[in-house]
Image (cartoon, rainbow, N blue to C red; front, side, top):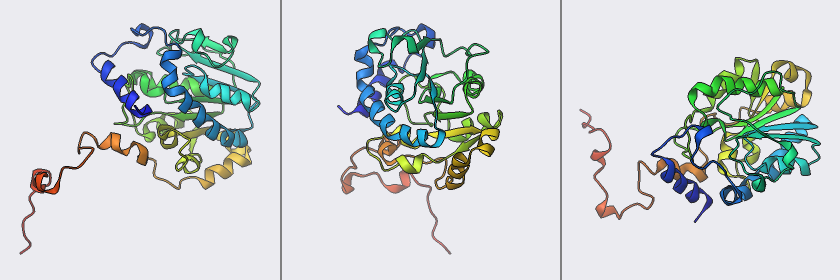
Length: 273
């Protein structure tokens, strides 16, 4: 069974009930849970983070919704000294890929405490879609309060996944970051798009958000911003396209003689006079 198929199967199991994140029936996610996605996360981080590190040059990093800490474990190998991962109490100690002292338990359905320390880089990848829509504004505010540079990705409509509650197109998140004076820099997708080592949801959804002051003062980030805008914001990765098209077409087309007539799907076209 492929990784994506396993994710779809998980969705089918949980689709009928949406549990508050703090009251999940699967209160502890151990090694058995993260094993399905951990390898893909590590491989993706190994390809994505070097580009981010080259642009941002961070010495500290916080990951909101870090899970087992796969991305942080790669960051540690790249020389980041100060690492903090934040996620719910359901992440068990035996699943962590980072030192236990680097992990902070917090119910992400609630805003982070005011006065939290700042970092050179904050990140949250494929997490925001798991939170209720009413948490979106404060979640973005949390990220902006943690750093001038944020690596962010979130599932788009129709992507599907385990307990997705707020799948949105990138403009939705861009507008919320802009309310805090952060600009979207689309410098990562073109680098990752054709890289098969990067999971397609990261290649499709990952952006940097940078504060206006940092952008004006940092020539590397300014150049990256100028080089961006090569792709539409709303575009589906080829490796995810089958998942989006399943509701509308069979995975394997039927023989031509058994296919429904086109007029069942398209408006009737009258002949030109």
